[in-house]
Amino acid sequence: MTYKESFIRFMVDCGVLTFGEFTLKSGRHAPYFINCGNFRTGGQLRRLGEYYAECIHAHQIPVETLFGPAYKGIPLAVSAALALNAKYEQEVYYCFDRKEVKDHGEGGMFVGKTLTDGEKVIIIDDVMTSGKALRESLPKLKSAADVDVTGMVIIVDRMERGTGALSAVQEVREEFGITVYPIVTMEDIIQAIRNDIVPGREYLDKMLAYREEYGVGC
Image (cartoon, rainbow, N blue to C red; front, side, top):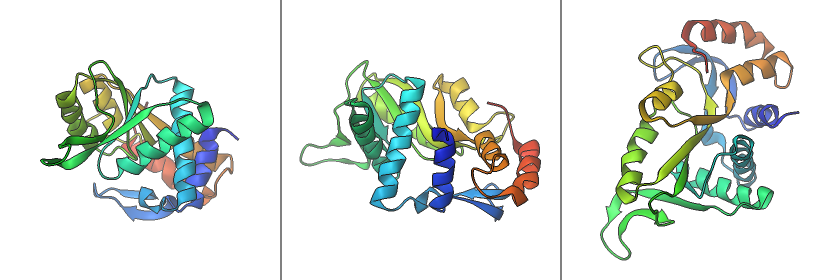
């Protein structure tokens, strides 16, 4: 089993990926739903970090610091930093932003590594819907130092059109020149169902129809 197939099964086992009839925030009616809030134990977070680390390692993304946008990105970046060290003996820093600038003590916008010019930073997040987290994070990072954002790693690329013809992942690449690396894509999930890696064959036709109506290529 590949790490992608293993991760899809892990999502199903944790109740993060479920199949059925769901109305999304966009108003679309989808046969699947991804709820990353269901990663909620220490063991699950440890394994999740390992999958982030495997994705970073597989794509050989240059990195010195992992940045986790507050709040949900914080435990993700920490778990990925731990996993890179434990699994690949790769020592990386991590940092995250505050929602409000601290005006006492050490002060500042960031907690963790103090960023420096030219530092290679990967942004760690869960699911990209509109690219909002990256659009909010970039100005903050650049205000601290002229960092080199070498990529963004997310859990799933839904491969769906946004407001235009492109997906959020494609829009980010076109607008900022930043590559978003998903651990898995919707195509990977569909293939895992076909291969009986996870249950859900009864929803396969609906998955394919949804993909046909709203999907885009990589």
